Image (cartoon, rainbow over all chains, first blue to last red; front, side, top):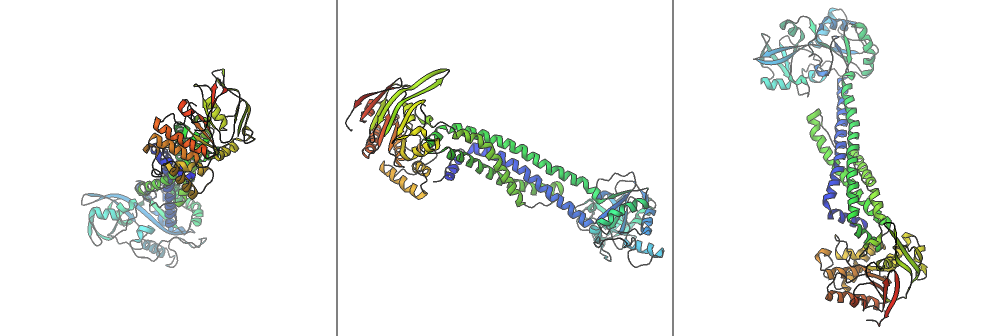
Length: 409
Length: 227
């Protein structure tokens, strides 16, 4: 028999206070692990999104307040389409492509739909040719000052599904529409079907794969068709700019502001800044939650340990009478606290990871995986708190007078 | 051999000084069997605590084998107690959540014996007190007499030179009392020193000497032949 054997047996002898303490510690670590897990994977997703979007820049009407990158064209404010031509002709360094959009409400067989007008890249080629700028090279920007890492805009790719990932498309007919996957399901439409829209028949060019954004519920058509059929005139809600890289986009903002002073220029970094700030807040909050819950857990453990010392006075006295040193008695209580801390930390990690795995997809649309580092953090923190909370009770136990073992003591 | 020289032990209770031992002198040679009797509050338990190295007297010396017990540090006294002194308690003081064998293993564990040595010695001791068939029973699963026999086995585990017994038969019926005293007598025959506090004259009759404590003062009342 060893000390650890005694600790283990005693723990199971009094399971109720043990489980109460364990629960308090577990909750603290659960909060830390769940929030940290969600925060870390949310940050990774944002980083991934930014990487996949490149150094995107949005040109908006000046009165627009932007909350959602994917809903940048849904504010109802417009600006002249002529700005697109000005930007294309300016051939600003770093600009890879332009994607003007106009968003209108329409109906398909009495089902309300969000119809978004987009301009295919072929239109810019035509503008460039018309302006005598040639067909070679970039139709809308220049290579001057552009860094080596180009944004992936699917140049030369005629797959209409590229709209889902690069937010541009090479070709789009006057009476073609592209459907988001959710809207296609709602309409029961598939590629090749004909849909009545704004008094004309449109052919479904393709159904986009799921993107997890509001684009899944949209319908895309040629910008000029949307302008004509909705009587909106030659206006757009937003001009998305695909820049070749973030460095170029940094210098680009100044050039864009100079070229279009009557607009509002917003970078994708600014759009996600709020989300990043929220993530940072969550991360800090998780430590606050951990501190509060571990404080409660620590107090619970201290209380249970004090009660345990009182309850076991005679037992401790007996052990001391038959040769247990004060150090042994201290170790007996601190060992018990360490077991509670380690078990609470491990259980908190498991529960926290499960909570994050369940809530992550539901709340933020992110998939969460276990983070082994948090197991170490959780177990370490919980053990330190449990042992620290038990120091005074253990000291009290070690200071007990062994004479209390006698009959009338 | 124990030698108590002018030992006085006082307590303060509600602002009043209570004298538990009053300038007591006592010599307990090796292999003695002593019964300490006296009314409640006469200082019997205090004397046992002082002898056990658990209560430093206010004044006076306690010598054990020529060594001043209370000149040792607390840890040294604890180690000495584990090595030389065994205790028998009225209410047995077994650890309720350990089996009989594990209870006997405790002093062996505390003295640093290996798990195998602990088990072998515990089995040997339980066999000696006639409980080899109850090794895996918890105290609650045993009778009072069996519990006291487990406690005796625990006392003997480290082969102590001295046994301090506090009312060892106080919770037992007459038949079991007889049995426990037979064991104590047997341990005495093995060469051990027994110091026993008791209220019971029949139990005290097993001892060679009886010391009566009255108001903290020791009085030698009888010498007897070995039982």
